[in-house]
Amino acid sequence: TVANRPLQQRYGGVVIPHARDPDHLQPATPLKKRYARRRYGIPEQAKVVLFFGTPRRHKGLLQVAAAVAALPEQLQPLFLVVGAIPDTPLKAELRACLPAKRLRLLGNQPFDRAPDILALADLEVLLSGGEVAAFQSPAKLSDALAMGLPVLVSEVAPLREAIERGWAVRAEPERLAQQLQEWLGDAEALARQGGRAREGFLETLALPVVAQQLKPHMAAALAAPGLVDGQQLT
Image 1 (cartoon, rainbow, N blue to C red):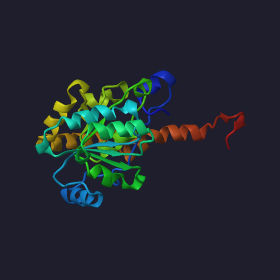
Image 2 (cartoon, rainbow, N blue to C red; image 1 turned 60 degrees about the horizontal axis):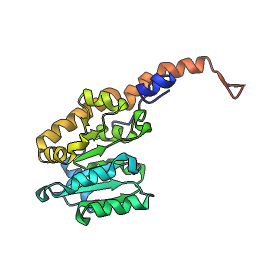
Image 3 (cartoon, helix red, strand yellow; image 1 turned 180 degrees about the vertical axis):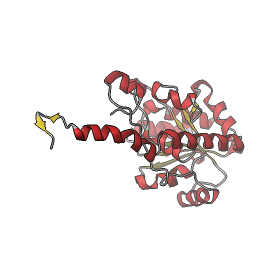
Image 4 (cartoon, rainbow, N blue to C red; image 1 turned 90 degrees about the vertical axis):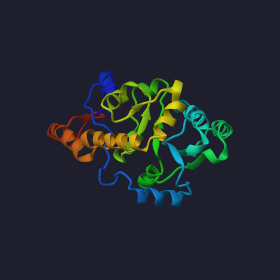
């Protein structure tokens, strides 16, 4: 199996995307968002731009930080980075790029807290770069879509369908600050995009849907087991 069509074109196999449980990850109610922000000390009125994953330089964190730094003060913008940053210079550059009140580094969080983490955000930005991006489908995109969280993503091959079908928004690096300001300043647009995100998730990434895709291939494999390291599977 492979996670997306670009990988399928290179290696063959069956496309099985990063599925998530639609009961575990559900859009956050206003009450849940308030509770999550109080738990993590995030101001209730802040407009939170989230990065949730494995922070690496090639994932565009500095570009997002620069865009958040350019946002007007009345938005009360906050760049929330969830995931440990082993690159010490990168962490220092992030802190130099933003005033302390506009940056929060939460470090690693348990996977079962993903709903609370995603509930903190108004939108998520997932920028991709390098050769890996041409073949990678971020699992965190599945998480965000499941929660009905608007996501800005790079227009790379694995994410093109999500952009074209309106489940995610194409990030425009050359005008990212303006793009963030437009979205964060329009609560109705964010809500509509969140609804499209959830619809896309339920259509293609929810566990029951993906399980039905996988079921016949699992049955075929079990009916005709192959060889592993020259040994017949039993």
